[in-house]
Image (cartoon, rainbow, N blue to C red; front, side, top):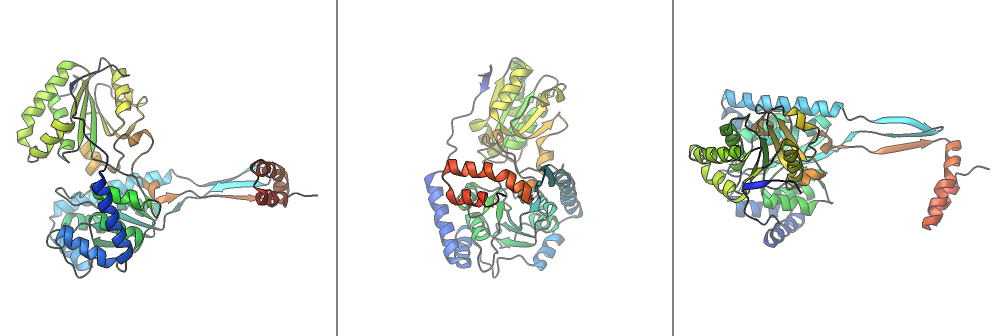
Length: 422
């Protein structure tokens, strides 16, 4: 157990998806699978109070959305897309297929091939995420996905948020639909008369979207199941406590269930950050959400040294890990449980979330112990192949046949023995 004490601990909260949500999502998915567009139309009217002649967003709607944005707004979106494309292209360049002769007459290899169709979900809600299209669609285009379908919840007037719509179009979506919630996941997974079925569904969303992805998994692939956002900051006296407080609030404002944690290298510094948080709450427009998040889920742990800080950070295994300490690079090699790492006070989480080029669709709820978030590989497969000469087959056959004999898989055994040579 890591040696640490808490100046503030989170209230114990239930993180499991409740049975009512599970049942509700199951009913929605069943209806969409059976009744297709009719069910989607009913649920869109019920949950969004919207009726559209067609779910698919038209080119004219995209043009109107583009005209509704200022030049600096489109420039910011374009720059984020450019940065994300550059980083994920570098990822793709470092995933290689291969083929070589492992022993005489035995050629083995793997290819790197894109998934053919992908469906991405772009969440709406109180804070429609404008960077998410870049994070979900651009890696798919870099991977070479043939058809990319995007769904986003309609606004009260039936349109998709202008900035999100522009970003989806510029990121490379082939088709965009004004559908939200579990019904959007069902439409992309099962297909309707209007919405094509896909091979994988990706992208973040609320608890209903997450549960829908869980329930359709197996029929289609999914990226991963994400919970509320998280940030863990490791900080010492070399950093301005006000800056640490600002970065904690940046994640706390997402959602009342968001989790922001500080590991402080001294008690006095931890208390300074707590004082700064109290001072900064009234200055942000999202104070109500951020304050609820911090009061319920926020934590401040004090550790005696940098080694203990690293151990505790690995134990937390959180989505975002930010190092605001002297010589932060010295800690990197010993850290292994995180979604994305932000090194130094000049690399806040907001840059990764919005603009720098890495992906913001990251694992939460300690999933970072065994998995990462969306990357170009999310949309790639690495199927293997093998080719043997007659001589190599004859050499391998006795070993394969013996394994089959041990398993009592007789037809397999005969298949292997058929390659034996006199």
